[in-house]
Amino acid sequence: MRFSLALLWVGLTPLLAQNTQLAGMQQDLAELRTEVEKLKLENADLREAVARQKAGQAQSASSAETNAKLRAETLNEVDRRLKQQTADIDRALAELTRQVNAALGKPSGAAPVRPAPTAAPNAGTTAAATNAVPDATEDGFPAEMPRTGTKVRVKSGDTVTKLARLHNSKADWIIIANKLSSAAALRADVEIFIPQAEAAAR
Image (tube, rainbow, N blue to C red; front, side, top):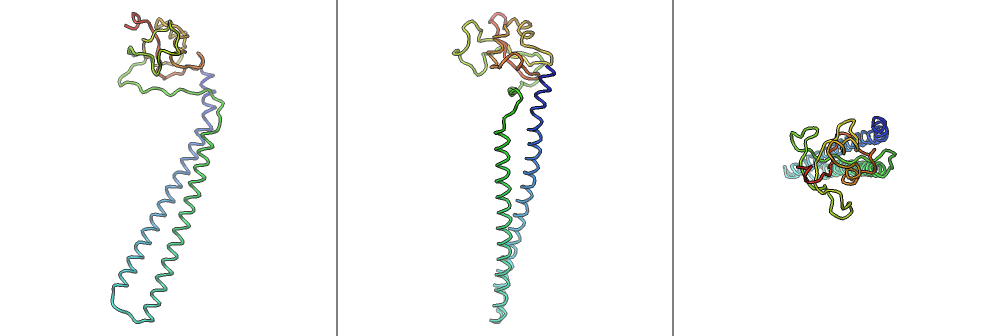
């Protein structure tokens, strides 16, 4: 069991490193967006100042022409900076998307880990409830396998054979009901379903 956990940790380590790198890129992207928002505010302030100047007292033709050129140059510079920031953000988004797709598409040598179902509040280590086979229909399961049973949270050191013996079930039933690839695929801290005959389940 410890060897399997070690292999799982070795397989997950590259993905954890990639997640850390992606988190850093997302933070950089958030900072870029903040800068763009600041530039937008500056642009709005400049336009408002231009509007106030335009509404003020009348100026001479030469003075008005000079101010118009100054305003145009200022607005052009702000627009240029906004376009540059937008292009930088687009490039960062494209790179982030590429890395995310590469991370998701990269094959992992570790055995797949089944997600643990959400445990009920105050559920004990072996607290159980009688239920039907989760996410299953009659088709595809052996006719002799019970459709009723118990939910149990796997503890460290538990094996399929041990759980089958403790709960008056069969190892094959547990593997089939929980869609395990093999008995070795059992993981600690995961809630599984143990098929039991109705008498035993009660």
